[in-house]
Image 1 (cartoon, rainbow, N blue to C red):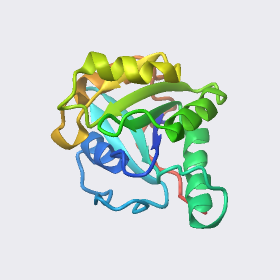
Image 2: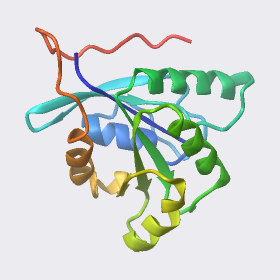
Image 3: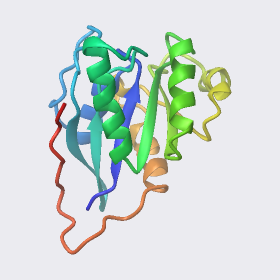
Image 4: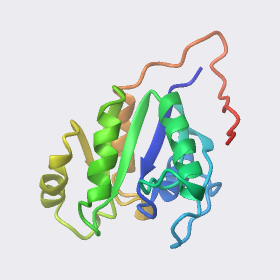
Amino acid sequence: MLPVIAIVGRPNVGKSTLFNSLTRTRNALVADVPGLTRDRQYGISQQGSRACLIVDTGGLTGEDEGLDGLVARQAWKAIEEADTVLLLVDGRAGLTVADEEIASQLRRTGKVLHLVINKGEHRDPHLLSAEFHTLGLDHLHVIAAAHNQGIETLMKKVLAHLPAATGENSEPTAPEATP
C-alpha cells in the first residue's frame, strides 16, 4: 500500500493546483471560484523511485452544516487516511484566523504535518516563513504551485518523513470517496 498525503486548507488556497502538479495531471478542476472541490480526489504522485497517493480535498470553512459541512467531513476522512498532511495556506492573503483554527485542529491529530505556503512567488520566503511560523508546525515550505516552483524540494522533504510502500503488491489503489 502506498503512503497517503492529504492536501487540506481554506477554500481557494491552491489545493487542486498543487494536486495537479504533484500528480502531473489535470484531474482536479481549478478555477478562481471558492467551493469548486467538494469531494476527495485521489491521484498517484511518482517522485523518482517513490510513489505516493495524493488526496485533494475541498476547502475547510469552519462550518459544520450544509454543503460546507459535507465538504469538511470529506476532508477529515482524507486526514484520517493520511500518513502525512499538507496544510496549504495562501501567501498572498497572509495568515488568517481560519488558518490558525485549521492548524490547531490538525495538531491534535498526531499526524505528520507540513505547512505549505502557496502563492509565494512574489514575496520574500523568509518573511512568509516568519509570518506563518506562529502556526506552530515544524515543517514549513514556500511554493508557487501554479508556476511549479518549490514542488520538487517540497516533495523531497515530505517523502523523507513518509513510510515506504508496504505489501507484496504496492500498486497504487485509491479508496472510494463516499459522503
